[in-house]
Length: 352
Ligand SMILES: *Cc1c(COP(=O)(O)O)cnc(C)c1O
Figure (cartoon, rainbow, N blue to C red):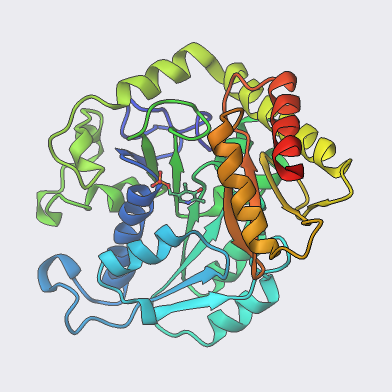
């Protein structure tokens, strides 16, 4: 999707795809923006004009998402006035993926406007939701499909990893970050909406319909919540121009390769359990303390000491009721030596 048809970031609309593209501060705002467009478009189809009437008295909108979706989805739902209680959660499998059968049941229990939020790249396991199934089930019910692909959507840049995003192009909107995998400074997120006209109505008055010709003269503030801002998109533009398609692909493949190496090195230790199938750049693992120390506290303490030692940065997360360690390889310059030094540092600290 990105890079192939949508031209970033100097064109609001790609002639081939017809999608709208907005430059925002991060995936949180990208999802927020896309979900606002989804809400307004679906309510319009149900005979309700949000722009004029607001949400008071509007038909109930349900947001369906996986049990392991990112917290920014619920934040967006709350910020846009749809209410946390109107989120319907679909059970996820061991890797954190939406279960298609369960999604069918949840959708059957919803009536009225429905927005389904899928995920490309679970923040813990790196897993991808089954987009093909999700899009098919959502289409049958007239639901909108939004994809949070903060880092995972970039898998599509590599033919080795693009199978992970199969079917993602059937969605209605996508959110991604450039400040994660693309290695540009913070404040760099992208929202893409398939229907450019629906996207354009985010802020512009419906009556002031300009026609597609005017879409060629891009005004960045049309496609994002922000109005005035610096030309922050420049670094993203520069990164894409200098890397090119091959450079982005190489960066993705190299990080994934280093993540697998990290997992392989960790697996050599009997007291380490790698908890995920390393499909992308995320490695989830847990250390078993030798004494009767509380394992959660032990893992948290090791993470803190590794951070202090400064050889690498890794954090903790909660996964299936336990405190575990998470490695996310996303630096373009990460080498095999960096991985080995990081594992050695972890080794020294955890034995201490
Ligand atoms: C990081 C992340 C987000 C939030 O991105 P921001 O750039 O911090 O707004 C959302 N979803 C996923 C899957 C993420 O990894």
